[in-house]
Image (cartoon, rainbow, N blue to C red):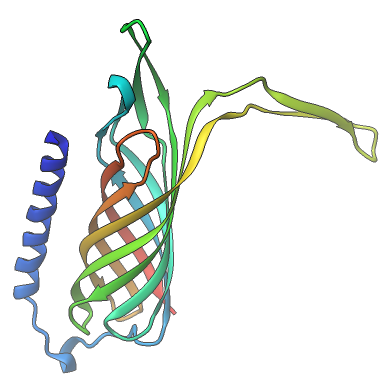
Length: 227
């Protein structure tokens, strides 16, 4: 609850800053009208995910640390206000997991998690101009890999046509793919050469089955192109 209040406070502050910036920008369409209408766009982004705590069953918990990651988007501008896009992001946050045994004793361990997000979003730009605040909602799937072995490693060897021998192995781990959804606020600015920049704060919720839902806030900086 404490962490959720902090995240919501940051989101409110970020939204207020965006609203203040929007009030200082002219909306004169003849001066800065956008070129994105009826065009595709793609972007590369740097992600900074915030730390969070997830409470599980019987007193267990998972503490995810903040982390930098990367991602990309591909979308189509239906009109100057509405963008529909696919959003992918990858982070590998460190975490500390705490479990409670039947006798009440606790055990804990640290590792790195692979967290991949694949979501489809609807983005609404407030102004039909080169600079505009925007809001976003979307849903999709999040893949979580604990990198904790779930069984014996498997693999094999084979001989190529040229007589060389290659061997490869695979270590199964505890992983899962879960439904997730998001909401974001931000602003974008387009240059005359069709390049654009986006900065946003995004809140992502992952629907878990054996713990409370995972809530992760992140800051996103994007550089993209309209084509």
